[in-house]
Image: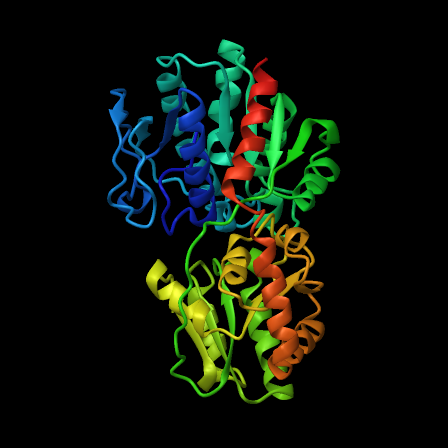
Length: 397
């Protein structure tokens, strides 16, 4: 498995999903993971590779179960799976794009070198930072290749298909034996925009981590509307600010919290300070899990106005916390959380009306939250991982 690295603020939902999948695969196969080392601790490529197989203890990740039976090879790299938010476009900054391509080539060569010293039946690769190495391994060794797509360059660049990462993804999709994606929404994009036949693509929705969300009294008198996600164009944070202003016009007794970090962080702080809701608009930055749980518990409505959202694990987290929600129609989460209210990502008026209807009508809000919470009973990682294992087995048989 070519993975994205351990769960961290840098790889967000991708890291969590890969971690949950690897736990299951480790009990049903002989699993070796080749992955980036701790990206948050690195400022540059150091061209250092460790080929010694280690028993890995994830004690540092106290919120996740310990994996003790997986062989891992950690490769140091500064590449982030979401780097393309800023740096992959052909037009704005060619120097940065070239630098990233060189780093990716170096990282991919190290992965291929490590993979050549491991005995395996199939390559299972997660998202674009592993795809160049996956293509090279398949070409050299002829091993079956399964790609798992959690996020596309098409999503990260808000529907623009003009980057070299898009081209890399397309090449990988063409050469893969099977593609797993996290929603029918993503499958349609891979089919229509990347030109990949539907019968090559399997949909496996993400699971939900089973967790208690205890009650927590809000320190604010107003009702709270919550946004959680990377502060990038893809996630629609500027649209959330626009929605907040429209909600305020219809329901002044409201307050807005934006939890996350990203390249729009500073500009959003400035925009929020000059907005009509400046005194009731909070940007928290990235929240660790204990604080995030409290924030979900405080929220009255969860809002996800993503421009293009392959899935949206935070929507499942909000559902688990019994927070009623309004989701972008351009999201995988809306496929499984069928009681959620939805709107087109660019329809801030409809988003605002839906949010206000939930703030005003507690019975309706409670019903929607309860229905979505009950849907999580079948949205387990165990069910998702069984589907993934069957796809891997069918590809290697």
